[in-house]
Amino acid sequence: MERLCFAMELRPGSIDEYIRRHDEIWPELVAELKEAGLSNYTLFRDSDERIVGYVECEPDAKTCFGSLANAEANVRWSAWFEDIIVSLTDDDGNMHSMPALWHLT
Image 1 (tube, rainbow, N blue to C red):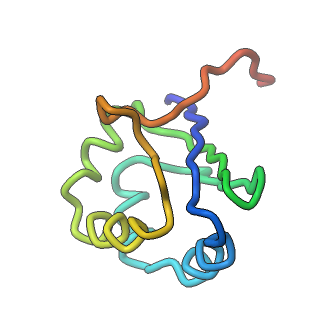
Image 2: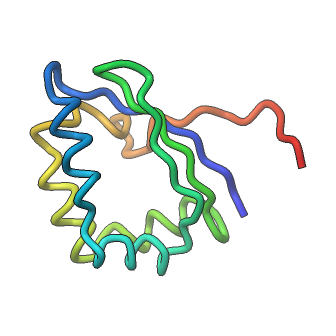
């Protein structure tokens, strides 16, 4: 299992809409996320324009997000957020992730 912490930038003034959309998350998307091996998925508000996420990926992030790449609900969800999220990945398609430094077991 791989732990992944990542960040994303939101467009100015879009935080309320970002929250509203997550309050109404689609059940079919939740099912796809779980089927892909994601769990303990949490989003944190760092500021009105920055979200930090944490998710546990089984067996690893590359496998999980690779299986989501063409999942129908995930593709629709991602397109729906194009007007809100400035950047979730770098130019090579990698999530803006943060390396783990310490973990209490």
